[in-house]
Length: 92
Image (cartoon, rainbow, N blue to C red; front, side, top):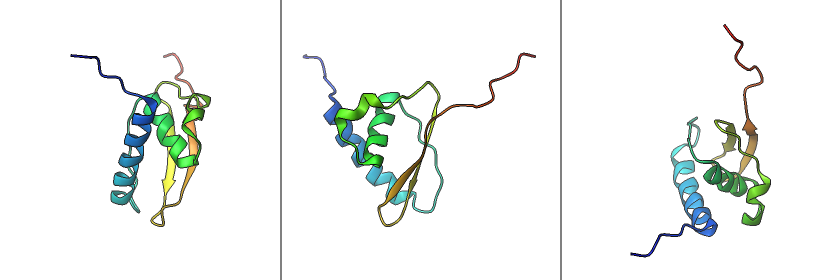
């Protein structure tokens, strides 16, 4: 059986389909979506209307937070990208 190759274009199409599905379910709701850095980049590109070629211009640190505000009219805004804690844990 040949190996399965997942392309960036496939991820982009999948991320857009997912975003359309959960944005309809989540109108007026707050929810968390946990994902891999690559998937996060694709979702952020879609939210910003940026081309897929810009994917690696977006930094996604481990366990970072992204906040996207989706509206019922289909518009959306990126409120936070690659957010990390401003206050690191202090040693005990």
